[in-house]
Length: 245
Image 1 (spheres, rainbow, N blue to C red):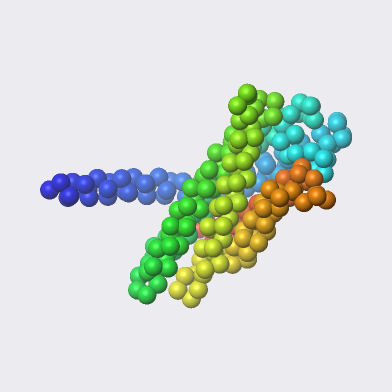
Image 2 (cartoon, helix red, strand yellow):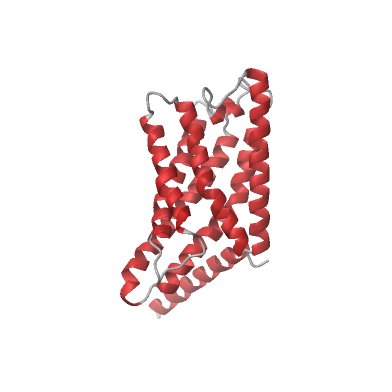
């Protein structure tokens, strides 16, 4: 009787999770989130950069991305803060859709001689989602706690490490899942996205930690941002093409 009750509770919990996922991954919502996130972030980043460049001589060779959120480098630091927080919220449903689509495929194929393989891929997908969610929290945090509002705890740097570190590690796990596709495991996402994750995002992140002598740390931080875009943009485009609107 106790085991039966526990099983019913587990099924009820899983049912609630599925309902939440279904609401978060509605095609219209995902389409709107993708379009708004790129419009808001890219336009805000470009406008913020232009304002800072004309006002203080800001440039990606000598300045960190976070400097766009400081009154010391731009008269409009609020632009980076706002777009970071809004974009992080908009991308959460997209991350859920991406991870859930990977998970469903591994779950569907987790039988027969490939069972162990798909179980590992399923675990990697779950880890990848947790890391993407962590990156979203970090992204929101760098907007909430800008360079000028970092507090004595240095919260801005803390969230900066979270966002870039989470993106790098999520690229490892999700990249492996995408590259591990075979005739029994076909996803809507091309392997090239996995290549971008593993061989662009991850190496650039490593280089940022090593800090090559000829490349300033500020420039490498910008390269990390571009390396994330290298897989986020094609992933988002692929998702949009496959939405049943």
